Length: 209
Image (cartoon, rainbow, N blue to C red; front, top):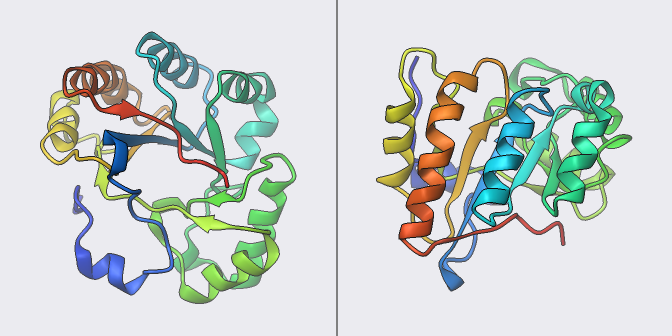
């Protein structure tokens, strides 16, 4: 499986209307979690974030919000922000724009947020424009660091290293609260949060406005 754990500048330039990182001011970093809510992984993430007085952003799949509404509510009640990750985790490069937009708007019925992250990071410029037209104030949130927790060929320590060697103020980091990522997430997240504490990084959520 080939992927870049650090997003190259050329990709950011191609999709410059999307958000790839936040301002480095204030020594803040932004942890994000894709694909939940999940009955095991999401409560664990919430527990670890609370332990370190950290806030994060959860990009949720609409059908999972429907299935686990109580967990979704727990995310909000804990002071984290959420974003739309489509209703059925669609790959924008393999889905026509009308279907992609309809699926995103279906998820928006359950996820009241202008934040949107395309599954796999795969979205066409036309889809970006359409989402911006249909969702008021929409922000397409990408990332500059992938933990790689979705990769079953690596272990949790590799995920830790993927993050800590590249983390800097303003970084947006991707983890997954999902079944596939669980083994690596369970190991990596507490260690990344401990690293942030030692480096005096403030772990905060991406604001919705």
